[in-house]
Amino acid sequence: MNETSNNPQVAPTTASPPVSAVSSPPLEIAKTYKDFSLPSSIITKIHVAKLVAEFEQVDDAMTTAGVRAKTGTAQAGQVSLSSTLKDFLVENQLRPATSNDRQALLKNLRKLKDTVPVVHMTFATQADNDSQQRLVKWLRDSVHKQTVISVGLQPSLVAGVYLRTPNKTRDLSLRGALKGQHSSLVSQLEALRARR
Image 1 (cartoon, helix red, strand yellow):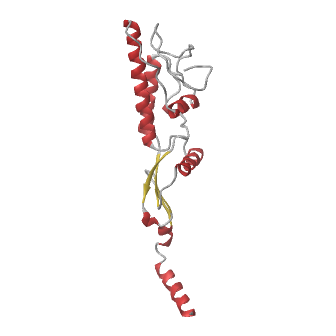
Image 2 (cartoon, rainbow, N blue to C red):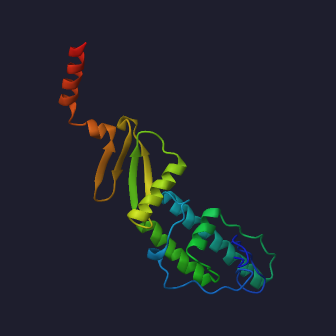
Image 3 (cartoon, rainbow, N blue to C red):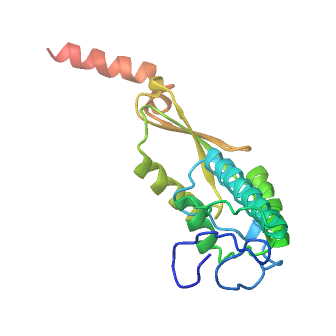
């Protein structure tokens, strides 16, 4: 990662295992998966899994480049990072320069993937990406800083959302609001018919 830029690129070097162009301090060992904050682009657990998979690929590429550098074999091209991985590294002030740093980070990312709190949200219609990001931001500000959502679609809800966590459920849909109101609705409709 280049310290003079906000665009973390991982460039292999020829002298030692690939590290950033500028020497960087080692990964803070005290920083664990519990301390990580997630960028707004990570909405679902699938996004967390993709983050882990991408970092595994980066680690493999850097390890391979380190071996090539030691044996004098031609270097591979520069490894570029997705904006999500860049945002994650910058937001958490992580600079995994050595193989040990990358392995420690990878171990913590895997734990994060397995423990991240998930709120299952079922909507009546498809929620757009901006709405999902706002919901996740609110959940992270109000509930837990690593919350992600799992989105489902159920048109029979009519409107609103059905929320489910491992220990609670909330039906905030129009269908849920009307449930148990059948006799009241029928009497109100009959009263309307009687007025005609």
